[in-house]
Length: 174
Image (tube, rainbow, N blue to C red; front, top):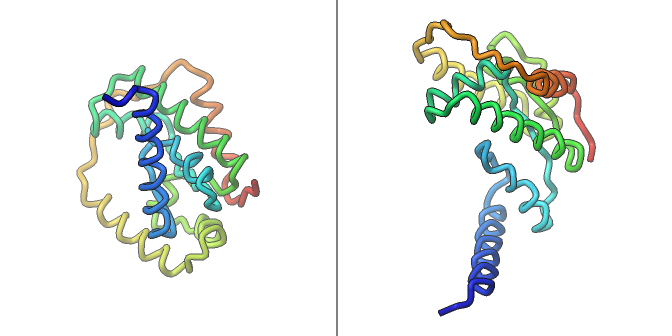
């Protein structure tokens, strides 16, 4: 038997090696909301990290989390605060930008293009093509009736959204 401490260290080393091998193969990485730890791990490997926070209003985030995972409102709120609060810290330390999800999927909204292009080096035509693919997929989904608007009596949710929204169009340096 391997002592627990040695087993844990072996697993961590293995995970770092696999993450490093993956990062050598890609230019960009998207991680799920629960994977906020990955940014720090990637930076610790020596990669030049920039963060793009693709944020949503709490009400839209809550609907999405409920439909995808069946989460309850308290878990949704805690996750929203954790993911986006951590993302704002990551912007401060690593630099990047914040972009509203609704603006990215709106074919009439293009102000975000120059910010994302400036950060990633991707040309705006490629970004517009990607947007058109996402919008086409999104528009084919059926809209759900908005009977319940999950407003949570929590000022932190509103403050967090407002903080992300205030960064619109800015390239944040670390």
